[in-house]
Image (cartoon, rainbow, N blue to C red; front, side, top):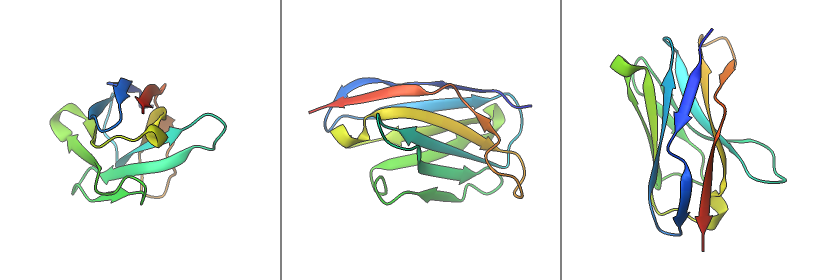
Length: 116
């Protein structure tokens, strides 16, 4: 069982930056960030493979968001720059324990609101 605790959400203006953090209670294989806007389905944002820091991004955030990890603290970060109103959503951290498993563990979510 892995518990995930997110922090760092808030209300910002378009063009501002924000950094989200997610602390895991144990080791993971891959950690990811997802988001869900009102009335929309949850969508993938970014992921990082813990062993070698290989990252993946959705096209909508590529070049603006950066995911990074601090293995000693079992923590991942999502640095979000040049935020847009369409980035407004609840952001969820998720953990994949094995490569053969889906994202089995999820955080409680943190709200990010970007005003125009």
